[in-house]
Amino acid sequence: MKSLQLSFALVLGASALVIAACSSSNKSDEAAPCNAYVVPPGTDLTTPKVSFQADVVPIIKRSCTDAACHGSKGASEGIFLPPDNPGDMYAALTGPATSTLSMNVATPGDPAKSFVMHKLDGDQCTVTCVKGGCGDRMPPDGQLPVETRDVIRRWIAQGAKND
Image (cartoon, rainbow, N blue to C red):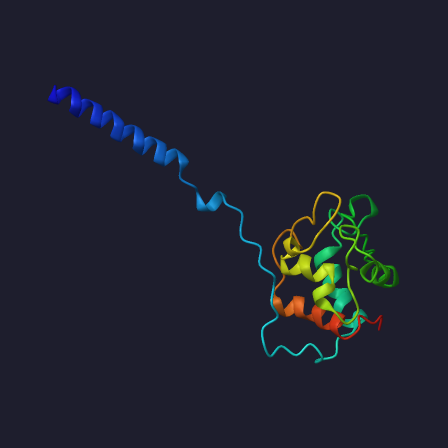
């Protein structure tokens, strides 16, 4: 009888371990929490002065106008940023975002209400989007350094002028 009780206890214990192992969550499979990017305290977005032509266009050309991303009309991923036409690039960047009806791509004077900053900062999950969601962080091959993102953030904060 004791042998039967011991066998039953062993089977029950082994079953409990298997169930626990199968039901435990794997942290790497869980989605990362959605946190809004916060500009560090003391960051001055009014200086240095940022020029669209001299400062922003080179970043956009280098990081966004690959033919597979925003550099060709066929694969524009929602916004076409013609690498050889800064005027059309500016118009696209300051126009309405196609993924969200609540903000422009860049809202002059307000980086926090600029969809491009949410995409660059990787917190687009904080924005309500249409057409199947807000997509992934940009650029897809790795987040731009904060210093580079802050050039675009400053340009927007300073009025997103076409200068």
